[in-house]
Length: 268
Image (cartoon, helix red, strand yellow):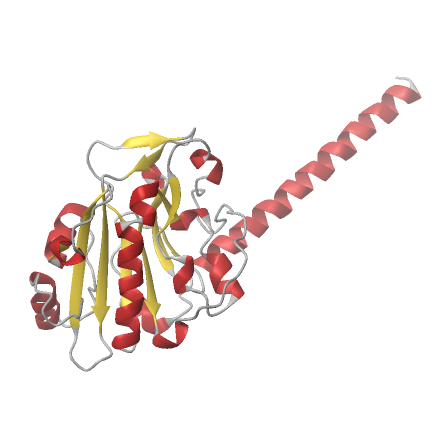
C-alpha cells in the first residue's frame, strides 16, 4: 500500500471522526434542550395546565404547550396573563424558529411559505411584551397554527384583545388556546401541517375571589358577529378535543365551572 493511499485513508477516517463527534455533540445538546423543556418554569401556572392527549408537554418561560406530532402543531398552548404583563412596548418581530424542545421535531416555518395561510400565534406576541425574551419566545414554530388572514386579523384578533381587557379587569387570567385537531382537515407544506376547521380559547379567572371560566369555539373564518355568540361550555370543548381542562381544581368547582356556558359575569 502506497503512502498516498495510507494518507488518504487516514484523512477519510479523520473527517468521519470529526463529523461523528460533531453529530454526537449536537445530539447531546438537543437532548439537553428537550430535557430542559420538560421542567415547568412557573409552578403556579403549571397547576392550571390541561391534560395532554399526546404525552408531549413542553414548558417555555412564558407558556407551556402540548405538541401533536401527527398534526405538526400544539393541541393546546397555556399561559398566565397577569395584569403586570400588559404592556405597549413594541419589539422588532424576529424570524420564526423551529422549537428544539419538541422531542419529535417541531414543524418548520417553511411549511407556511406560499401556503395562503398566516403563521397564527396561539400565545400572542402581544401578551408577552413585558420583555424581549418573552416576546421573541412566541415566535417558535410550536406556538403557531395555520390561520386564514382575515380570521387571524379579524375576529381572532378581537378575541385576543378582549382577553387582555379581562386580564386587566380581573387582575390576571389563565388562558388555554388551540385548534381543534379533529375531523377532515386540509394540510400545508411538505410536513403536512393540519389546518384546523375550528379554534378554541378557554379563559379562567381565579384571582378576583369569584372563580369563573369562559370558553369560545370559533369556526375558522372571519365573522362580524359579536364574540358572546361563540361562547360555549368548557365541557363542549372537552368533548371535541378530548382534553381535560383544569383537572387540578377541586371536583365540585371544576364541574360547576366547566358545565356552564353563561357569560353574564364577564364584561363584554
